[in-house]
Length: 177
Image 1 (spheres, helix red, strand yellow):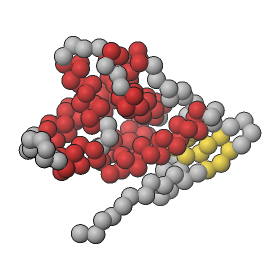
Image 2 (cartoon, helix red, strand yellow):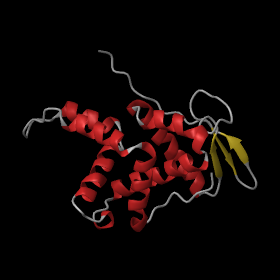
Image 3 (cartoon, one colour):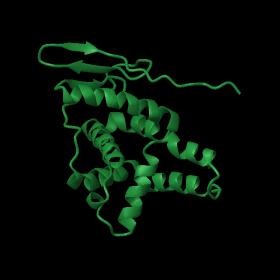
């Protein structure tokens, strides 16, 4: 995948729209509504469970912010924060994966995006892949793009002088109950 994952604030709206059109805006609205329907306790109560659920999928709050701005008729570029733009950078790469390999990638990528645990690991791997993309390498997601099947995502990274396979691992923490 050759791509510039950098995003300009003027392009952020387009990437959010494209992502929501591809993945289904109503799917995200349902996830947001489910989280927002949970009881919210007044400060200084920590709302730990609500925050945990909201943070399991790092894209949820950014998509919620975008949809709220759009509903209020506000321009995204006037309200862009660094975190919102980082999420938009993810969406740009995800959009490219969807549209460069539409039929093969769509079911796998949709299952990753809507599974909160898998998404966190995928975004970690995407951060590393973006690093190599910015360094001028061509990154292919072998497992996603049906070049093979591996335990985890196995990007194939290639430049004019080097090529290598690298397995990105995201380690979770299990807390005994």
